[in-house]
Image 1 (cartoon, rainbow, N blue to C red):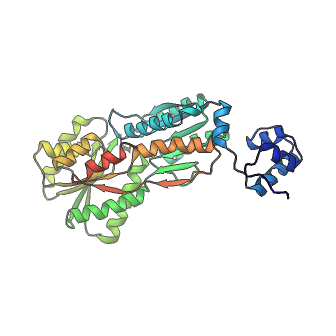
Image 2 (image 1 turned 180 degrees about the vertical axis):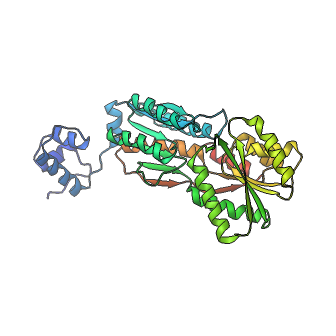
Image 3 (image 1 turned 90 degrees about the vertical axis):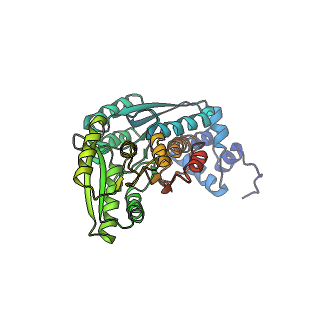
Length: 358
């Protein structure tokens, strides 16, 4: 083969493959209308030359518009999902040259039918890609099947369902996170004989499989290392917060010996603020996520540890992966686990300064 110039042009590839420039262009951009024999010739030349097209310039020139839909749980301002949305907004700004738009559709994570209804709404928007926080496996699978039938790439955020095959997943490894939390709570409580797990439920249902998987990891650690420890469970209301103070009053009245607890959802402030109101700073509490109210309780001393999982980065990286896949034709790493970061009142401000800028 003749020596090729340092900068390989489309017409050079066309000459070597014995096809037209237009045929090479269609192959490079995945367009139809190319005979299989011609396609194979072009692909063989591209492989021999290790040709890397300038997809950035090509995408800018195409003026193609991309619409992504995010399917997320309903939430209040400054809840966990607000940081995910901030990451999504930052990514849309970063990729604004490529005509990216994002719509967010919400579902009630405590109502089985809500995810299905919101999923149908998302599909009706004819998205180029979807980012979703999965609900229970059966319901999520039905929605994902529709995405796959329509050849719509999808990304899981926050929690994963191993039996499914997303383009990418961003979040903590839930069971490992729970296992780590078990180790930390036993160190924090100096090997307590009694621990309470605070759950937040509505009509008997947890809000996410993330919570369930974290608790499984926690119980695995306890069974392996401290099987004699008594684990109590207190179900708090996820929707009717006014009921929780009475539930907590009754529990602590009945179990004054328990001074160590953990919750696997983001609203650990519900317990932290109760302890603050009761002026109880002797109870050792561990929870998840950097909600403002969680951080305040951490600084006030009614939460000892928070485990962070970088929701802003999850939101940003999800949009970036869809862009890399659809626009730049890059290979995407499928499983992207967020670090399990343990925060105290001494290091939380530094963490916030670094990670909320991202």
